[in-house]
Image (cartoon, rainbow, N blue to C red; front, side):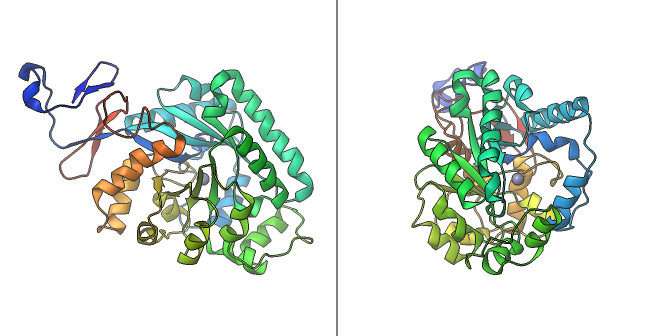
Length: 367
Ligand SMILES: [Zn+2]
């Protein structure tokens, strides 16, 4: 391929058509830059602070009780994590923000960021105030992104168990009006389904622990995904993150509600928290569009999509490298609506280029 100094693909042509003295040769495989569709950059200060393998219930309590560092520490951790992702060959990130802590930094980064402003309120009486907070955060982001704000950000729910149907309705109205892409954590633990089917288990315990009223709420008697999806938009792109406890019945159900679903796996984070990986072959058999994420430094050893690929290969050696690389590049770019620039090696794109060694054990960023 012929590439200019900024990394733009000028032409993809056979060797023989290019001046031999100008050819740079590498051993291994060249692939486009990686798209990390699920990260929480603002949580980077938690690197190494939460022990692995305790389960989500303990994990959330530990995250909540962690001493908040000062602004300079938060900023330094964001900067280091961003630089690490860049070195790891990541060119674009779908990044969850609960605060404005990362907004200024992200706009100066060499990485493209889509900011998902994440809002939660299980208590229905708090839905309007919660959504207003999301709206205020998006206004704050607008100071940095200006006219690109709607293209590069969304107001999005956290998880089925942290949103009332009223709050889901507010997301839907806003997303349909602004053609937003949405993302939601989905079925990360078995207890998420237990809560929606039977109103018991650790999620109910946690809501009680945080003094969130549940007395008027009735369990829908279905899995969390089946109970939630009908309240979300039918046509907007929607990414479901984790899917560790999603089954065939859930996937079949989704086909009737939204044809623009993307299924994001963050396997290292799943191993870190619950020590379980999703049944990835089930999603392949159902032709699901798969994307990859790192989640945050609260629950991962690294922010590297290539490390996620290697873990997937270890657990599912039968999956083709071509498929793994497509999930890590083109599918993520399509989800974020940036496949005109990123995701594949094609004339006119500036996708970033990574060199994978012959043994598929290392990557090096070329541009
Ligand atoms: Zn997450």
